[in-house]
Length: 392
Image (tube, rainbow, N blue to C red):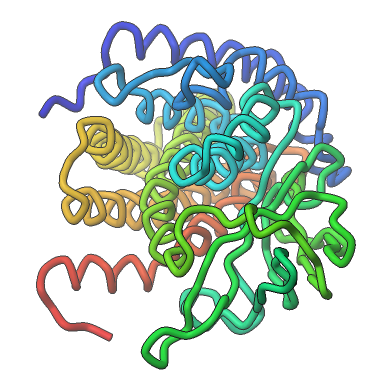
């Protein structure tokens, strides 16, 4: 299996980089300062086709198959946007991976026709509500409940840290909920809850350490009623469906991390060539040059692991092999990104501590990469299990 990018992929990368440099980079710092979610940008990203890379043409997507590298294209787009703004990169990652793909993979034809055209065009966004105050890495501890009554699901509970869940263009959130018990274990199902459903509230947005321009809310459900037909996929398969969704998401988060490391490298090389001490550029000092060399090594390794996992997804690799590759890419790339931002900030010295310099935002944004879509600890557990170790 080859992990080299095709000529088409390289051309696509250049197109997205040009878009990111023109439409996102000039505004990213201000959006961050203002905690502003740029709704108008979603339409521009939709016009470029970024939300529909893996969606069929009948829903307005590009219809890229695995053989055509559709998932790899998505990761390239996320990487290039993450290079200038991680908030917008994770918005794209969540919009496709957690919003569009579950409906595309598990939805009925009616659900697809109802929701996908607007989601693919960037006219609307969707979130996926899994995490709860007492159920994060242990998602099977879900307490949100949904009971059937008169042909409707009645949902009660809460979710937290949900991306794209409360913007003015959010059209739905898919939530996991207990819908019963099977052999004494909770039956977890996924249910589509449209925005504006009585009893469903996207609470005040979080005041976060980073990703200030990303839309993230806690959600509450109090006797929120939706039609029985809003069940997504099979009843009782919601947890299994989401675990499969997370595998894809881990590779996409790795792509965000690659973009972050790329940005750290570019800013550090530029600064090391401009900043002088004792009459020479600091890049001539081994202490600085060697750190920048380490950034290049981390970038090359993280990118290779990410592209390998994406290529496996596109090639339809066995689930167990892809799952292992996804966790490896996510673990290494996210931890490398956090290290890269620390190195870049150190190279900038006192200026790196000032918000007017981009490395400060990179530093704040990177930490969540080790947490979202499964913490580093969870990735190590999954990798160990993949090696046959019965770790708990």
